[in-house]
Length: 215
Ligand code: G6P
Ligand code: MG
Image (cartoon, helix red, strand yellow):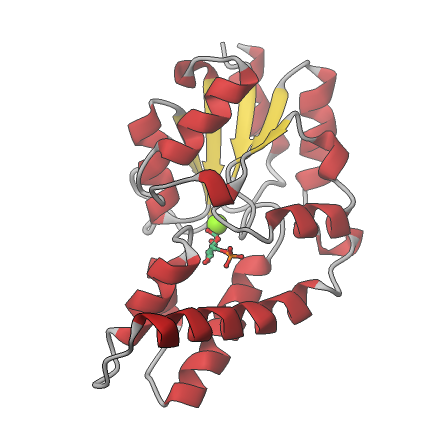
């Protein structure tokens, strides 16, 4: 029986995946680099610098380390402006209900997001206190699909990975959960999330998720 739910943030709890896309799109347009929603799928769950590298694949020009730092910082500025306006209303449907149902069952809740902006987003959403543990993205060395971030979450909850359910909207995230040895719930397109143990369109289907913790 599962004892904890380890959540991704962007695209699972709130639609910041959209803001990440818009911020990268703004940067790519300024650089005259082609970027679309398909390329964006590859950025989901992936760290800031790794995301920039993927975007620059389409550029004929080479960028120095310093230029890349500058560009990543610039994107982060756009993103920070966007998340300033986030409130409780930006929680995706079903999230609040799910969190309270998990709490009621004594299930622990953790966050495994690669975003260094995650604490600000949780605070603005008004749900920061509901987490038993939030992984500090700055201390993670290998980004998803590496399992590191999920393993750190389980360890700090004092649980074995096999006792945890990971919930993700990206292909890289699902791979990370599986490699960590957790049960993987995908939120979104079953085609993109085909390696998940279970795929749901959104978190509104509380019963399907809660069943994992009741059996
Ligand atoms: C998450 C998102 C990615 C984002 C990464 C880093 O994994 O899914 O799209 O690039 O976090 O976020 P940050 O806020 O630190 O730039
Ligand atoms: Mg995500």
